[in-house]
Image 1 (cartoon, rainbow, N blue to C red):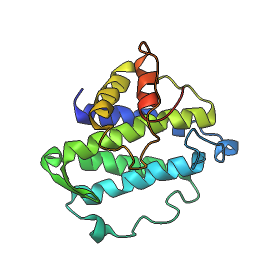
Image 2: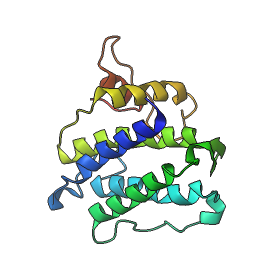
Image 3: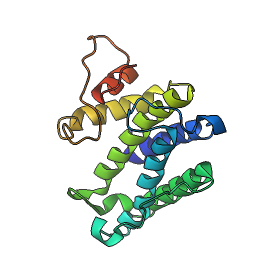
Length: 187
């Protein structure tokens, strides 16, 4: 699966869950012990807000604290819809995948950054599903693509705090269980 297709699917998985959050669920806990549902959606909105500016060539320093604070406002679902649509539009610009993105840890080719965001979207779609008690299953093509990408990068992100340490699972599991275990989640 190419990175843009994977990203679109990851956005859809997270969006499907955001759209069914009930008003009484915004403070439900998620599998990430530091975040409730609001915090989790805030994190993904925040991440999407950076994309257009990073894809215009700006650095982390140039963007500064433009997105600090409450990025959800009074309508978190609308904030998500606006931020994710703007991020997607930036990725679909002609030549976007040929660009270099300036991240906090260095310059990376655009597809590397988009894969990182896609992994985050899919794993956090599962976190959100758990937090709101919605369907956890996802299409296996996106799960397998993200699992393959995660296997390539799990060692590089060890100790970074992005995900909890991997959990050992039996040799015969489904792809979603394996992906979750690699990112420190038990199904």
